Amino acid sequence: QTTSDKLNVQNIYSDLNLNLTTKNRESDNFSFQNLTSQQQQYSNQHKQYQKLCEIGEGSYGKVLQVKHKETNQQYAMKIIRKDRVTTNQRIMKSTLLEKNILLKSNHPFIIKLYQSFQSQFKLYLVIEYMPNGDIYSILQRVRVFNESTAKFIIVQVILGIEYLHEKIGVMYRDLKPENVLIDELGYIKLADFGLAKEIGEENISSKETAPLGTPQYLAPEIVLRKPHKQNVDFWTIGIFLYEMIAGRPPFCAKGQQNLYKQIIQNNVQFTSNFSFEAQDFIKNLLQSNPEMRIGAQGFDSIKKHAFFFNINWKQIINKESKSPLLQYTNQLKIIKKQQREQSIYESPKSTNDIINFPLFSYDPKQSNQIQEQLQFDKNY
Image (tube, rainbow, N blue to C red; front, side):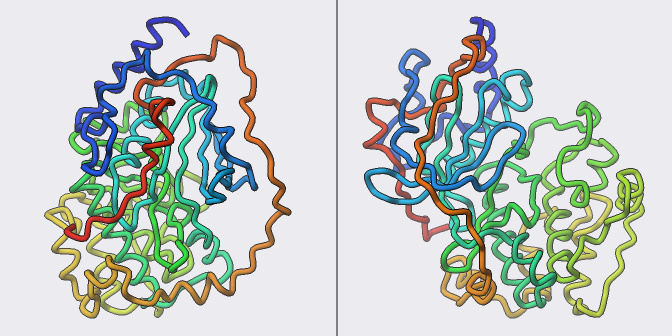
């Protein structure tokens, strides 16, 4: 790429104005802010991992289940092709922001980043591997959760989003069953921050070619392409909770325009599966006026709602309760493709695709010493 292309990447980093690129965790023993683009030489660190199988694939890359050759530890590796992201400034910025959200986050219900590096043509994020899949996979099989199980899940989602809003300074914007992963204890972790936005950043949907996100989860202000802020996450919490109890989202018309019309009309119907408290809580989340949503004035209003009268929030954040999800993950028989260890190759691309992403990688000379093994701060 040209020098101007590289400057564009530098400018995007400078636009991430909430210290996501420069504020390091206290446990870090390496200063990312002192790295210069000259120090960011391309890495062969992908050769330290063996591919076990492919977990998923998207427009800009894929996610693999991998094993570290020396430690045999399993991870998920998100691989992003540089040539797919450098052609669009919005996508490039979201890619860099996602990495920095993962880097800064340290919470039991947020997926953990262990390492990031880049090769000549690709970006790599090495994150936790979640052996029990996601909420979507379980709902595909059982269709609905009882209200108690749905409540257990939504409490963790709320705590994770609270952390993103108040500690990281971002809105999530992509809550859905596929992005709620399940760990070995049956607790959840939020994943995939490709649609996240910094709180306080001007965000006018009318400038976008189409509303971004899962259509059934879009808040009215996004459908109408109005400016929106973190209150969109409270709307998606309501949609997600409704889907877990009812087996489908509250708005699911055929055709995009019919769906958007339903969202704007906002006529939610409840079945007998919902308690009075659940209905009231969801109605307070699914307010068309973002400022009227429960949570808009702070997360305490959510935690004090009658729906959570029997919830010990501290016990859940410390993972001291037995998870009701274990009954589903233990029964879930996943027929995996035969795992065949393969090397992770650097696919050859045109030299025109080459561009360096400053501060994306660890210094190759020190990366083996700075792989992050973080513990959750119990004071939070």
